Image (cartoon, rainbow, N blue to C red; front, top):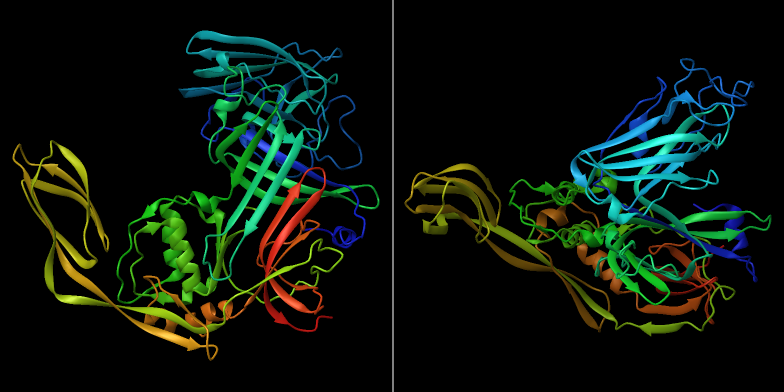
Length: 596
């Protein structure tokens, strides 16, 4: 992630300058109009410009003035496959004017309201559209007709004429003049909204907070809050031309830490890909945004747990939960070993994030989101990071909190038993329904569910352990009678315990999916996974210079007054920025070994 030079130079007694930049997108992900153009080269890919991150390394060679570099670096079309974005077939004249103006047309079958458009031109040649004409329509009515002049390649076509861009369904972007003569227009990106990068020029302060426990006793957290100047009042709620009303939950932002190396270059590393919470604090001349990670949005309650006598792997259960929350496979990374750990228990009715939490603990794993905002369930790995925290890094005397001694680690094992007799789970003899409708029913845990109905027809049915969804149509005007039956499932519990010390406190752990089938699937039992963590008694809290490189879950050496080889597990890592870094951390002692 960081170069060796950056890692070493951050250890210097006197650091070089540190920086922060925040990439802030007020982008509407649901705005997806159809794109067409009146002028395109055969290799042009107009649709590709709607992507957020496009990297082009080469352009095809074409006969444009001072464009074709005759060193073989630009292939001719057909000789090599290149990823290309929009390239116009019309070319400007010696005065940079277009006789025929290339036009990109945006059309939508629904009315859209857009803060503006951000257009990024060719990053290789850095030719850009110096003058443009933008027209917007609502059906056949022209609601906007404006000319824009850009002064450099770095300029973005951004307009915030809010009242004129309300409920449009067609926009035409005409390229009137290029920045260089005899050139085609090349567009790399066209984003629906505003893409801004904030730096030290407008960032007042920021704070990153991260916390992860090894046994998932709390949900993992990673938050980032930043304050920028708001002298232009763009984020004031009372500003009718402002941007405040376009700020939505889950809009993406990313933040990066920068460090000036000894050679004067600035190296940037990702701090986190985050999502806005929607909480915005607007002051007189500044505004503060709060962000969090994907896992904190997984609040949908999962109701589809079922009993499976043959067992179902923890991996498959996690995928079930994630897919039910519409999280695709690119957004999570699950340990393959979870496929070998099975449980016959049904998942309880809980929020998706809580279910991932208990699945991770049951599988002796840690639940966390990494800096890319990918949800992870991974096993604990005792891999020592040699770059620890010594007295040159720690800025306060560590405060040590000693936990009570652990006596017993106690885990409750669930035993599910299917009753032999069929029981009535739900009964309603007076359902009123006109036409067809969907009925959701909850009942006690059961299996082998069936339904009987009079006065109506079941068109579709999905039965789960504690929940059923039925699509029913009425046969007439009379009430419908519906009875659900099945074999009830009872649950009893036994305990599995391990004694750690002759005296102390007991630690108990229970969740619905811990069964004997689970424990038989694992070498290290859950009582040991839980107990080994709580048997670590010393917790160190201290201020430091701000560690931008380490994530929670890191195992590393810590220097104290009495040991230079204490081994700690980083539980919390917080960083504040106000033109310089400072931080505070919480570390749990997990060993005290000699470290080379």
